[in-house]
Amino acid sequence: MKCKLQSMFEKRLDFIMQMQKLRPGSYPDFPLDLQEKSSQQSCRDLALRGVEEMFEALQHLKNWKPHRISNVPGEVDRDAFLEEIVDALNYFFSLIIITGFDENDLDQAYNKKDKIIRERLLNGY
Image (tube, rainbow, N blue to C red; front, side, top):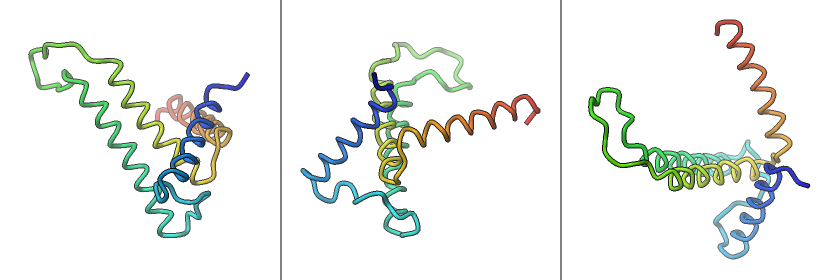
């Protein structure tokens, strides 16, 4: 059985390939050469799209202002909030894929960074 992360990467790769076929120019040929200006522009574009989706997720949170005394009526639409986060993840997965990384690279980098931040926590960073 595949791990969930691998499955997500495979779905995103399949989507990118379909987009390249059905909507030429929607995604660059990859893996990108990160030394090239056009490649860096593609990375920036995908990253900003992911950030925009995170901002859309944050729009579903209405009661976050520390200076507000009263609570805003209404409940958070948790499904819509999560959907926007998934949209952001899709752009971030796309960024990882077109730069030539895969789920194993992400897992290794995640674990390496996790170790660093935990050491920082213990050492008063």
